[in-house]
Length: 189
Image (cartoon, rainbow, N blue to C red; front, side, top):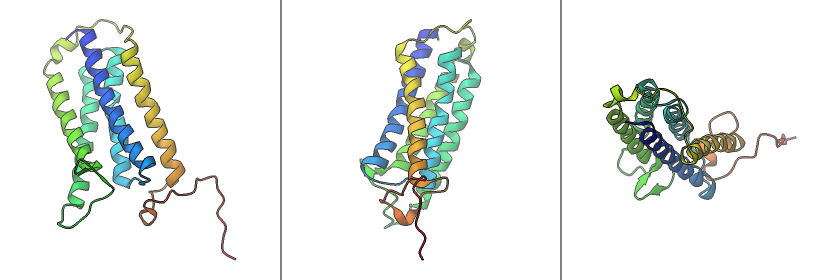
């Protein structure tokens, strides 16, 4: 696998993470749905999934970079499966709205399992990953993917802090945006 193919595949993986983070952020803002604690953890794990491709784009492909993403994908699949099992009972409406018939956490599970499979396929070529001598500039396509992932992660963190504070988002206020941290609450007299 030469450097340009590796950079392109890693950039495409980052654009996949961008799609997931944009979808989650759009549901949070446009549909006014506060994320549950497990949903927040899944977003963090998708951001951690991007660490391997970012390192591969910056320093060249290496099996240890893929291993970081593989660990994030395995933990993400476990967390997503946990949330699926929480809502598996008949008649349970699930948490949040559905997209194409499945909730965000089900799509997250599919995404994490797909990432595991794709990373495993790339690692089949690990003996060819070591022949890349020095890191070279990645190009605008890859640099744009890196900047989008970093920016979306930062925006997700800031918006969640403004809506929920440093604790978990209140489930009793589902659908109602919480006042930002800097707004002083009045105490009853």
